[in-house]
Length: 403
Ligand SMILES: Cc1ncc(COP(=O)(O)O)c(C=O)c1O
Image (cartoon, rainbow, N blue to C red; front, side, top):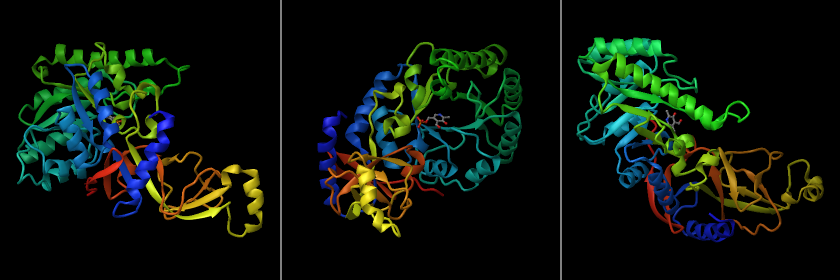
């Protein structure tokens, strides 16, 4: 949003929130901004590449439904078993769920033991791709499949440079593929997942983005070649070759990309961690809004009240103080500009003290606005999201259940 539009935008939002039924800290999703981000995303996807929504970064069923409809996709990437159970209980036969990290075997067992698909057409064997990072974990999943007398779909995580997880070399990949090939009644190979955010995060002096991308793609291609050439029985046109994520999404808009399945989530709401060069085309679409409970001229700190004048004189940003409802979120104060938490007073999750310059003209019951640094954990701290259109609240959306 151009700087000159910020003030009218937040003033209208403030007026709407002041008239809304309940004044508490809120997580807002701006649907107009989200729509523009979705249009950018659509323009960046290659025709032959499927889009998979990263659930942890948008952990709200109604928000996921909204994005699935706009992007015409039912592919999800899930990182948390309680979310997987929630999705399985309401999904239909068209969903395809890829795990974004390997689940401990105990968790996979628990998922199947507690599964409730009574009201759905979702098939928890055909429609889930379990992510496996080591031959040892694959053995555990084989035993689980045998115990369940079912076939589990297995997607192998490959390490293409991040070193967070995944098979580290081609020989380990071969060992895993051999195990899958030897147990066709219980294991079905569904593809690969290689995550590559390091490509844009490495300091240029260590390795350029172009070089890092090339190396990650080479590494992915070598893994694909092993399957195609050495395990032709496992190779077919429906394999999922997943990768990317918001930071590298635009780089995969190229014929060089080895992927046919791209996952992302955060770029659609753009928390501040995603203010990075590859994502300049995306705009912020999520904010925290919270009301002011008390306003003070200057800054008064307990036991050092006589220093009030000096504090205000030393730091013009201390000329006014606001006590807000809540605080200390993993977020950056955004509007009005110049707000900051007073560290001397001590941060508080209950009532934080903010300092502001004199020109800030907010009053008690006005709202201040923050941008979350990340969406996943921050969203879950708020009961319901408020969906906003034209700076008006249009709906309340429940967040994902945590257990
Ligand atoms: C395996 C994997 N894929 C994709 C993503 C991308 O998610 P986002 O677009 O929200 O950054 C992540 C994020 O952690 C990830 O771990």
